[in-house]
Image 1 (cartoon, rainbow, N blue to C red):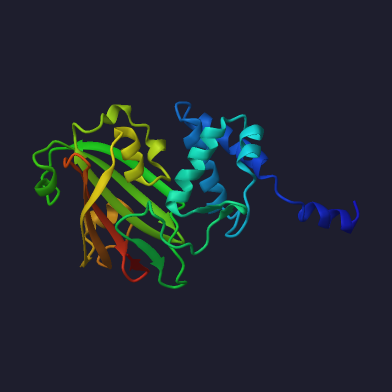
Image 2 (cartoon, rainbow, N blue to C red; image 1 turned 180 degrees about the horizontal axis):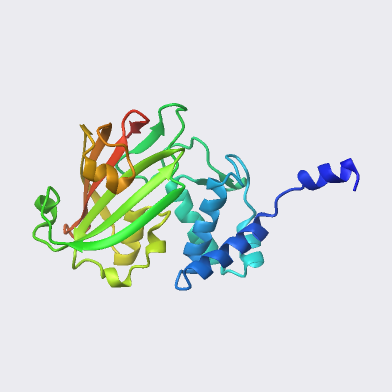
Length: 261
């Protein structure tokens, strides 16, 4: 093959739909119970995280993704909507869908957002590990939620080489944890996901921010560095019927991230 031919192969445009098809198959093999929406969302996050598509790159039209991947248009729209909630993509009429870079805070982002101190760009979560458990432990969340037991959604999030931890406490009777598919909680705005599950809207109640030295327990829990300064964020919400929805604790390295409200 000529050198020209080699260059043409090296610079051939990526067929993102072919890549997504392979990633969807991998997701299904990993978790046969996973919904097609969740599998597509995680496949796209993986492509963004791995740099396959970069900030500013345009994604194929929704209709093309649906046809090529044999998905319902609504499945594609829902998956892209969840990524837009996270600020990973931007969808504009007349311009299609692009990978985001430094977009302003959207209406579905509550409480705050982070900026990477070194670059000034918005912090983008491109990897999330989730566990859901039940506890009777009491803490600062008990004041808002009342007596236990509680459901805890614990997330270890990373992006831009930075790790952030979050623990969301909810009344145990609010949702059945046995019916929660963990992949449905990866790469989503958990609040809007809970709203969809409950069929109710949430209201902001109170958010407080302090700084603290990270304990050994929390450092190990969230893959953070012990004895380093972190933002300790406590966020509370309630449902439209005034019942408490969640109390959330978030731990983020204050030397690497800046808060934006």
